[in-house]
Figure 1 (cartoon, rainbow, N blue to C red):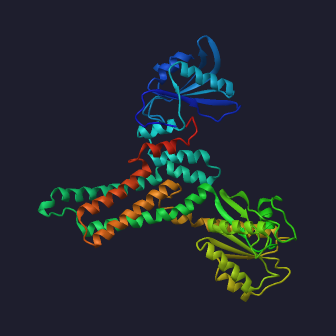
Figure 2 (cartoon, rainbow, N blue to C red):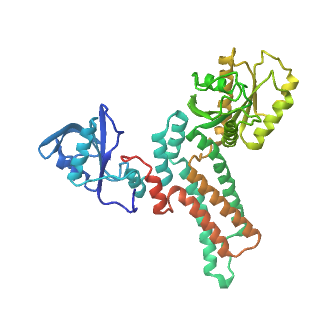
Figure 3 (cartoon, rainbow, N blue to C red):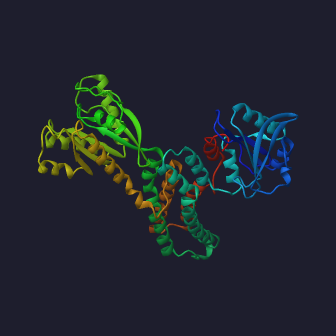
Length: 466
């Protein structure tokens, strides 16, 4: 863990590729004495005399002992990731060779990097802001196209650019309000209160969509949670198995066989969905089944999408509507997809379904035994339509980080308080205090204002070579 945050003046080294055997690996160095250290261990051209962004073939030696045949990339600051002089040593992928190169660099004057220290140096040297630094970890962790697109948008400053503009506007007004405090005895008003209120409201109108975008951004980042719920033997486990194309859940004619939640991830056209099969919801005296039902209800509250599957041959419209009301009482904001199973056994009229359509977002009538492919095709289409609300945010930045979301909520709270104070003709000092609180919260996102504890928590989660 990084113990303090100041502009560094030493040289760090670490493997930049994952552990284990591979064809090649990369060892990264960054810092003031990088090229001096490189010249001590590299036999080939004198690297300190070479141009930036060039490649050089040669050998790494520890004293007179040959370690490996390598290619070294040179990146001179400030045109490098860390904004410092940096080199990357491409070597053979033996873990032993990588360790020997790292130890040789340490013997020559470098030290082993802390987790995330390369990214931390990029941040401290003004190469990236804190929001961009966090997005680097998201890029590395991305497992599908949607996650990568979102992380790359943040890395390019999609959120940071918008927030900087908001913060500048607030700073301008705070400066004027504080100027009023300096002339308190003269009763002068430098900041137009009407204009200030309009400006604060405009910023609130901008922040609110950012806050709302978190539901989508977090879902894309971590996978969209989809709870599959219904009564026992409705076909929940059959649906999960069909989605996964695998016998993941036990399917039985005996009611109540699913007593715990089963969770699996599936990618549909680059979007990650986390499907959760739950215990059948019913009244029961079985203590273990009751625990499973409680877990099912909890999963409903956490889901972005709820698939409610019901047996058309057994339930009346009133039964289904009662189940839907129960789901809505546990999660009113989730997209609700109702799937009527076993349509071949009892063909229900459209009037019956019209009652359901008023309560759900989407509805299907299927037979999971004979219409699996057709069911999956329709369900995939509806799930993708549900997450397609990302279009609402295309002209704006998308928030996917829990810390950023929390900071925006704090900024919103402070700005709402500013409006309340203005409506009550509060004094300038109170207005300045709340506006500074909003500026602090916005600045915390990009790292313009931050503390060692926050930075340590962020960079400490990075891998060593990043």
